[in-house]
Length: 269
Image: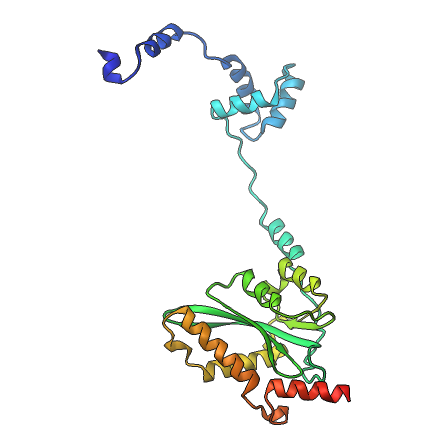
């Protein structure tokens, strides 16, 4: 009746009754391990315990047995906390900055030789989208762009991968997390491009790209967009307009694409 109430089998009950009063398996070994464990004030792991048992207790245990007994009886080693300064140093070593090679030499005469890149946020429908672009410093043309709802590394990596091959081209950015990231640095190297970075907290060092973002936000009614797809098409349409239809006074009153072709024809003459 009691087995039925406790929902245990009769054989299980009699098996327990038979073993009652017996010393549990590994108990004596546990007492020895615990003695050494307590001596180390709960700071020794299985490796130290194994060495201490052999040296001080003249007992050799397989490391798997020590780990099993520690798990079984809850002998949890106090794990050393990570040193935050080491984490900072590691991050510093992984994330690299580069010299400001461009040095505000924005007036370029050869298209495809110097690019500027940056990210801006675009609010719409109570949230943000993020636009990454690459601008040709010579022609003013937006040669690559990518719009995303997420400001992850994929934002800048996808933007780079949309670029046609430009071996030897200088690509200038700020010192933001994305551009110092090893993944971005690796992608730039794969394309045989040269990295350049603005000085810290100096947005003027990348003024032409900032100028494009200013024009875009002045001329595009992005706040009216209700869904991401609508915003994407609006940005796509504006970038085409900017490259092919929007004349610029300082580019001989030409559009960026017209000015690019003008510079190429002049250099070929």
